[in-house]
Image (cartoon, rainbow, N blue to C red; front, side):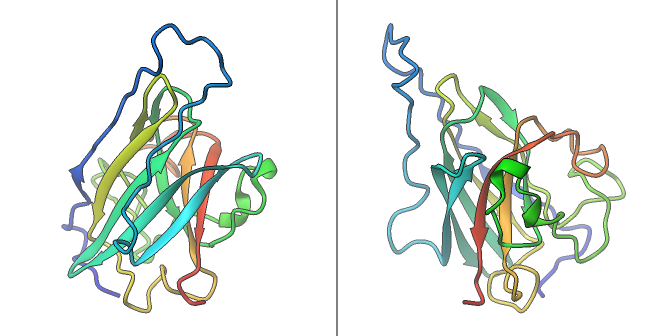
Length: 194
C-alpha cells in the first residue's frame, strides 16, 4: 500500500459546497432537490451509489486513482441542513440501513492511528473532511486522500471491499472513535476485487 506516513495530510482540493435555495416560495416537501452526478462518465476508476437508511438511492460517489492518493468526488441529497462527518469503512456492505449500516464495519485504519484530522496522535486513513448540506439537503464536494490507493493491494482493494459512510452530525476531528459524528445516515459500497 502506498502511504506517505503520518506527516501526509488529507487535503481538501476543493470543498465545492453547492447550497441551492430551491424554488422561490416552494414549501412542498415532495419537491426534494436532487444532487448532480459526482463525476462525468469515464472519469472515475470506481463509483457507487449512496443509499439512505430506507434503502433509497440518494446520490453517488466517484473515486479516481492519483499517483500518490485518491481523488474523491461526492454528490448526495436528502441530508439535513448542516455539516456531516464522512469516513471510509472496512467492508463494502450497505445492506443493513435500518440497523444503521453496521455491516460496513469500523474505519479503515491500517496504521492503527487515532481518529481525527486535528488529532496530534492521528489521523486514520479513513478520516475525511466534513461535507455541508444546504437547506435543500444537497451536498457536493471533492477531496484528496493521500493515505490510500485504489491500485495497490491495500484496504480499498481487499476481498470484502469498503464503504463510504456519511453521518448525521459533523466530525469534530478529535473525539474517539468517530469525532462525535453520530448515526450513519447514508452509505456507498465498493468492491474493487470483483
